[in-house]
Image (cartoon, rainbow, N blue to C red):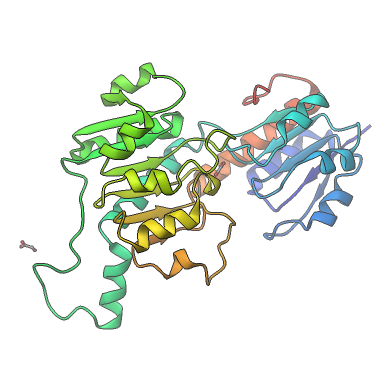
Length: 323
Ligand code: GLV
Ligand code: GLV
């Protein structure tokens, strides 16, 4: 008997090929680049043994109930899993696969790119070249803050946070501070100093958010947080938008409380084009592209398929989330 698998989006072909080749599942695919409407998802998932989803799909009790008792495995094409109602999933004995490690390099690279883009004011410069605002070489024009001699603070020195730190160090970073639940032995490699959050926020020239979204980190970067940052400092977030109170960030950026911000993640995604943050020259917003290299997305697709297949056959997953 073939097992039913529901796939919530068109995904890179690498993973689809693996699912087809395995020959154990009937694939039902929302074959679009746009998210599946909620009503379609609830209908499509009915009776499924496996669910392959994206970070933009909210998988809660309603979806799990709509799927019914067949559902054995949820495999998400992401390292983040804040879109999954873990308690409900655990209660039902469903296994979860995700994609750590394979996107670490791409995401760290994007974070460094965003940091340099933001702190050196590249979008403003590009705009001035195009609109005729560049009249001549000027000693005091488009000046900004560089990495050399700076203090960088990484909130969450996990796989991605460490990869970011490794890449930033060679730019002449003087001190590398980090926070998290506990000190990490891996931090030695980047001479990382484990400090209280308050110290990190007050002393860093660059604050980089690289933690996962949990009840503890939700809204962590708020008015109080930004009020402790240096006026010359730059804020970068490539984890999840909800770690930041965006109204408070807007206040900090527009009042000059901090120098600039670079965000690869927001709430909601996408931001409405008339959102106040998008009106600011000192705020660079990207469309959640941390892992978006061809090769990384291909490998993520494969890993997501292999996690799903392992879940369906009751074997060991390449990357299972410990619930
Ligand atoms: C991207 O944000 C991911 O969680 O993979
Ligand atoms: C800049 O181009 C310089 O020559 O200082």
